Amino acid sequence: MRHYEIVFMVHPDQSEQVPAMVERYRALIEEDGGHIHRLEDWGRRQLAYPIHKIHKAHYVLMNIECSPGVLDELQSAFRFNDAVIRNLIIQRDGPETEPSLLVRSRDERPDREDREDREDREDRGRHDRDDVDDDLEIEDEAV
Image (tube, rainbow, N blue to C red; front, top):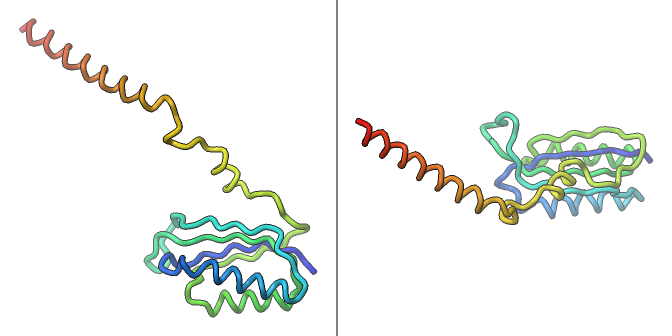
C-alpha cells in the first residue's frame, strides 16, 4: 500500500455534506484495509482566484494509506461528484500524522478578544484625537 496526501475543495453551498462525504471516503479506504493517518477539515476559505464564479470553498485534507484500486475509486468519486470543485492527490514517501502548518498556525495565534492591549489602543486613539482638537484651538487663538 502507498501513502497519499489528498486535498479537495467542496462548493460552499454543499458544506453541510462534507462530513457525510468524508465518512463515505473513510469507509471506502478502510474496507480495503487502508488507513487514514491525518484528517483535517479546514472549513471555508477564500480562493486565490474565482472558480466558476465561486470565491470561497470548503477545504478538507486527508493523508491516507491505500491500494491503487481504492485510489482510482476515490478519483472517480471526486470526478463525478458535482460538489467537489477541485482535488489534488500527491503520492508521499511515508505517513504524515502531525498537524499541518495551517492548523498549527491557527492554534498558536492569540485570540483577538484576549489581547489586553486592545483597550490601550482605544484609549490612545481618543487621546490623540483630543490632542488634535487642542492644536486646532491653539491655532484659532493665534489668528
